[in-house]
Image (cartoon, rainbow, N blue to C red; front, side):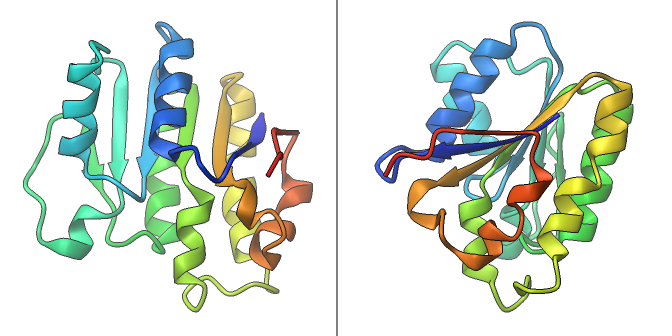
Length: 170
């Protein structure tokens, strides 16, 4: 199941992601981050007393800053706009039994509009690419997006990809 989760403009997408992690219970979670490093997320989880044992992180921001050092339970994408690399890593996680994928966030991708152009459905194809693998495992992916970005063409063209759209207040 593919879910688009709108959050208000004042909400922090990472804090919303933490709520989904807490609700997941014992599910294996794959957390894709375009905003914070894997280390920063692990530290935040530790402070909140959330066990990260069942969480696999795909860090798509650290490699842009410098060459990341290996971190257990984490893999690194070349860049936030490297959708092919991120897709490959997510598919590997799904095959490894991770049934909840949290993508933090589609709003962050908008900063890379020239690399992910609207109109050719690049983002839509990326989102739909998990549907088959998730269906086999009865899993779901939650894509977080800020309400302020609701009318952005790149987001608008993806809407038909989702099985559920939640939230949406500005």
